[in-house]
Figure 1: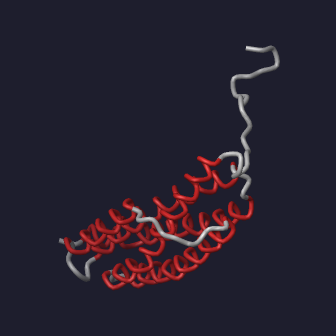
Figure 2: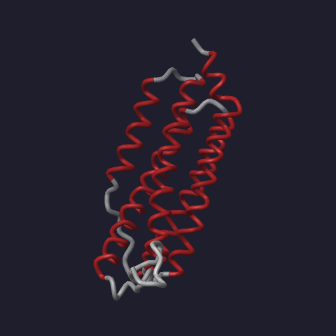
Length: 184
């Protein structure tokens, strides 16, 4: 090791450009298309969760997130535009699986129960965590590729996804989990 070098020093540049990293840029665009499918899929899936939920605060939280999700779709369309690409969705197997699991929870739980609401919260948080991971990773890639405008858009959505997850936790902790624990 050189005299002035420390173990934590990077050995390579941390920023590049989309033109200088065509493979990474291609991966980024592919992941945006995947997330675009996921968000559009949620626009269709969230109303089912709203209908299945019982607690008013849970219904309100999911309704609010549905409206945010519609904005997220629009933002991803802006990202495509900034990339000079047509907005095309690529099927997201992960989101399809998470929403299928959520449908299974609804089918397997008793209507009108706090237990069902707990299951909906768990399923919704899985969705949020997937979105947080996706937006967080894409934000980092956009930053690495020097796509500052796109990184800003992704950061805005990432913050909203984290807030939605936090709201779901609060709803569970403040009442629903305890009501479910009292059910037979």
